View 1 (cartoon, rainbow, N blue to C red):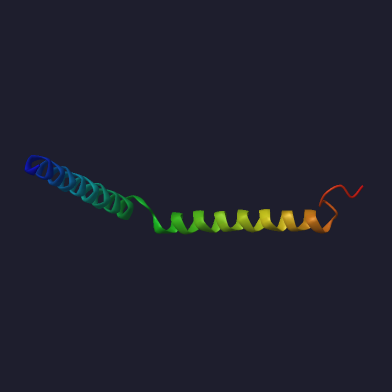
View 2 (cartoon, one colour):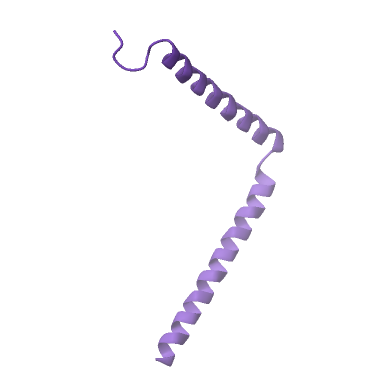
Length: 70
């Protein structure tokens, strides 16, 4: 029983170390690789496309595109 508990504890410690290392590496990579201006531009484009899509759906509904209206 003690062997099983020790094995589980060692495995949990290894998983915690791996998760910590991967998150540290990703955080460091994100901080150095991304250009803040490029990130802002991409987010602006994403918001613009979402707004255009919502507007197009709204116009389709208002123009009779909602079901079989003839």
